[in-house]
Image (cartoon, rainbow, N blue to C red; front, side, top):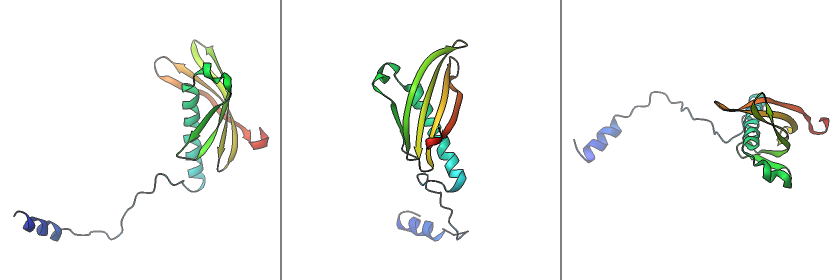
Length: 133
């Protein structure tokens, strides 16, 4: 078979086994409930870590470092970035805010650079929410 005969044979051989179609969820839609909030918080914490570890400390004298996560809609500022040596590793401590749909959270963190594995999180914890911090 060639040409039109092949097309007609291919169309004629399609069979629907299951009438329910599985559709992948929209990856850009916020997940509902606690699971979605936890996922968004973790994504935002990754964004904060990336901003701190890639920051040029010499240019931060002009003010705080802004960050934003397009996938979650969250944003905030990172302040008080300080670099020091801890047990032979370069570490950066910082304070950050996270402005999200579930409120404002203030974080305290410290990231350290291991020569073999890269940056790792020594501390990243919420200090409080909004006026509680």
